[in-house]
Length: 100
Image 1 (cartoon, rainbow, N blue to C red):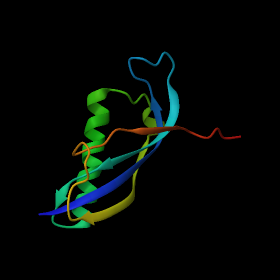
Image 2 (tube, one colour; image 1 turned 120 degrees about the vertical axis):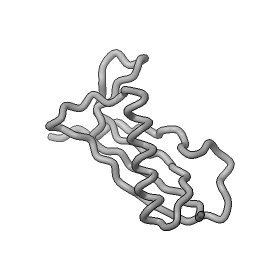
Image 3 (cartoon, one colour; image 1 turned 90 degrees about the vertical axis):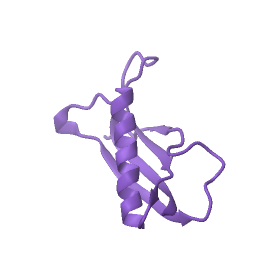
Image 4 (tube, rainbow, N blue to C red; image 1 turned 30 degrees about the vertical axis):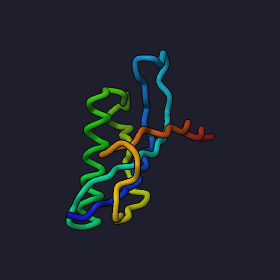
């Protein structure tokens, strides 16, 4: 199996965890490090890993009509794993730009 480093970009996430009193609209980046036969398969695994993590943490508060989006920002095959957590790094959250 090949090793991949995938950057996943989340957009339009209404996030609220236990410490937040008020939810906020945020974007985020997170690295995923799946093993797969191809880059396409690695991208799919990365999206599944991030989706499952978000469901497990019960952080997303979006209404069904305002669904969040997960995108692949970059996918690279790597020879060795970086010195970090696998299969997912920590989130880097960004406050979403306000429209208007």
